[in-house]
Length: 188
Length: 188
DNA sequence: ACACCATGTGTACGATCGTACACATGACCT
DNA sequence: AGGTCATGTGTACGATCGTACACATGGTGT
Image 1 (tube, rainbow over the protein chains, first blue to last red):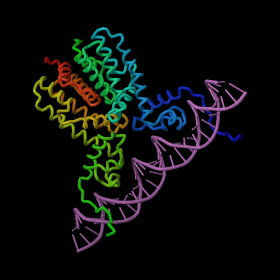
Image 2 (image 1 turned 60 degrees about the vertical axis):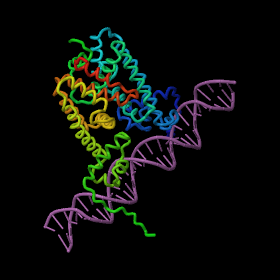
Image 3 (image 1 turned 180 degrees about the vertical axis):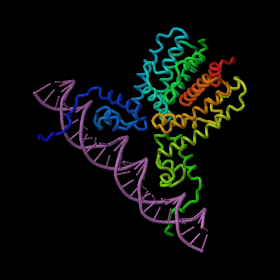
Image 4 (image 1 turned 90 degrees about the horizontal axis):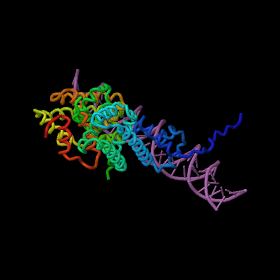
């Protein structure tokens, strides 16, 4: 029967900050920004509550860094997904894959992105992140089509993914391909 | 110096319930679902706090009714906007107007819609509302184009509006028209 | 005319949250 | 080797929220 101090030993834990950010993204994905609290993040990161106020000035700061990290992690994946594209036919396939989650991004990632969009609507500090994300994703598409078409494809992807994420009835892959091919003027 | 009872007189206030719902939508538009509380709604509707718990079983119930009301109010506006459309050229114009807020719906309405989308992602009870909304909006487009194209146009609208709502740099009307015309196979 | 109950009103309570802060500890520099 | 300070830890506090509930009041059906 030792007194079992239960005093958790101090932990040596470099890059704890990064782990907290990763945990924050998990929490956002599962509970939404509305359900994201210091305590939930701390639990997810397996870190005491006080640690959050040490590494971040507040919840807003933490969310901002989490969203920034997520966007900066998604961008290269997004870009890499179009690496092998050579012609318009390839582009149609790549976009179709993207919409159906057969790229590096799954439903969870898109959900976080939408949380970011909505949060940015009311938090100007997050506008920087969304602007940068949109600029980069459009730039990728501009490697294959003119800027105006790029805007169109970008918006179409956004809409298709959103409907795909929300709707219970999944859209068939063939249908998506037809739609994308239509906008890009590619004959099936 | 009367004692000034300050006891607010009971008010005769039929359809107070509807006013609360309208106030809830206002609050959602301004503060998001995350910032929507009983007290804020009560203040916006100029109604005592206790009144909310009388007319609604809880905040979730209230939000659900508010979103339902909003969707049912938007649908006829959306449908009416396409009433005068005769050919594909008209359709391009109508969609362009819609994206640029020259229809019955403004940024505020779209913001509420996005709040609904995101809320529905985690609240199955709201799925019914989003499903119904999407079905109706697609049905409108199917009056002019085949079902697959309708899905495409619907998604494109969603994406364009979202980018328009979020981005600081507004997209030109001409560019939008070009994009929409492209998807619909209409020559400028 | 009158009683009843749907509706209106104010307040209180427990839960949870963001944040502050006092204290502990050991990695790192000299 | 030893002191220092960045980092780690636990707890407390005030604010706010959802909700419950006791009581007031007058429209309405009889």
